[in-house]
Image (cartoon, rainbow, N blue to C red; front, side, top):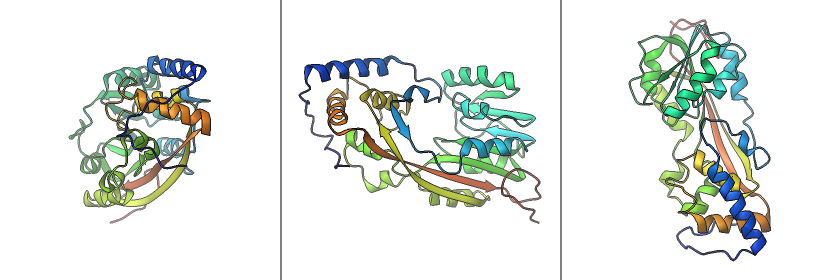
Length: 283
């Protein structure tokens, strides 16, 4: 992949009439579709992303099937939690964005799970030692001391998280080169240190870099509208010049290639255990 253009240099791309018509159609469609929930199926046929080898949804479901009381933090629209064939007898999910709270409630209540509207800031609205399993897929922030507090002794935290510089080829196409301190955020070793500082034992930590392709400009618009922290304040109108340049690039060079980073972290609270995951009895 060639180096990303400097996003500080606005430059309109001379699109042919046919190309401009395709651009306007794709952008208008992607700008109008709902981005509620955490379901990315609208991108089928428009974008591809390699999946991590550990299979988070399957591994989470295995743990849920053995848990007594489970908590899913920042559940989004509840889609990942609802994919588990069997939930714990007591299953609770938290979510902070009102449209997702309603979506998750409709999806999870028929499964017997409770959805709690929460601000995603400490403290978690639960008592100490409440859950033997806490899970979270792609949390914005991980409040390690709160996770340690609500876990039972021997309980497990199991999470897939966004890693450092994820999809930064796309981010830097719009924002320009990012400084090292920005590219280095979400380092899994920092997560390990924070978990251990909260009194948890990290029993598994894996990082993978995965190929992602955007096949048309509509996929880019939809992705940036949905994953709002990638290009803060993204709108079609504010970024039209860069969108036109990227549309031209995709049409002339093929899919825009970026790389997603994901890490898996599993941590346990020391104590006597018989709970899901890679755990053992300690005194």
